[in-house]
Image (cartoon, rainbow, N blue to C red):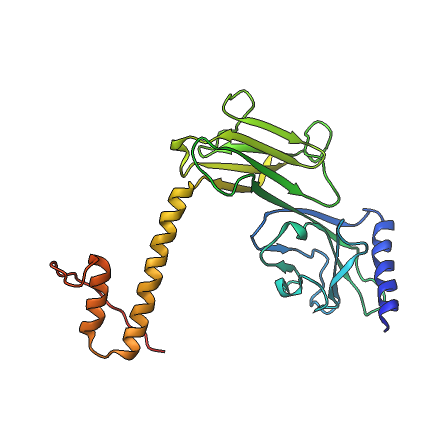
Amino acid sequence: MSDNNHLCLLGLIFLSSLLTGVSGVDEARVFISSGEDVRLSCNNALHDCTSTTWIYNTFSHSAAVELIALGRKRKDTESHERLSLGSDCSLNIRNISTEDHGSYICQQWTAVGGERLRPDAHVYLHVLHVSSSQTEISADLSVTLFCQLYSYPRVSCDDSVDSERIDLFWVNQAGVKLNISDSRYQISSSSDHCIISLNTTLLNEDHNREWRCEVTHRDQVKSSVTYTVKSSAEAGSTTAVNTLTTKEILIILKTAVFAAPTVILLQIICDRRAGRKDSQQPEEIEINTIIE
């Protein structure tokens, strides 16, 4: 089948799924945080997946994208390396990004251009993501955290207008909801775009403090993202420790390969730890050697 014919067929499939309405159609909402893995169930699957086709649609695509065709993963899509088909015909996506949000449709067909065997199963994937206005964090610095729920079709995060009752809010590390009555925090939101921001000036005691953004659907928490404050000074010292450990590992590997006497290996480690060549205090070191 030519590419033009295939695109026409895909367009007809998607248009047909829209025109049929929601009667007899299975629908589900899945909420996930960016960076996690997700499994989208195909609730109309048959005994095997040779008839299963997964279609994806979002604002960033001018037309629907076929991800799985009759049980086989298409390799001409941007996300194909992160996709897999489960034994139950579910669609598995690794390392979710905000670009993965959208509408996923699972269909069952006899063949390409054949007959549809069952009503469509729709899965709407919502991706929760948190970002910061600052890359360098320190005390007395004003920082704004942005929490956004990416959805297609777009939903409203306002209890008063949406019967689905999708809402975003910030909580502290004790799980207490933050509100605008607390003078330390400035919280603002955009219900149309499902964004809620948290602005505050950091204090010295905020190191390792956590703020969590949660999304609720019909008053039940569906997903959350935690932001942990790490000061720039602490991050620098942590990096230095990690670098020293890496050097030690390299020295151990090189010495284990090219220097037979164990005494040399022990001396190098002791020198590293004591900061001088002659160590006055003996150090007990347990060495586990793995030979592949």
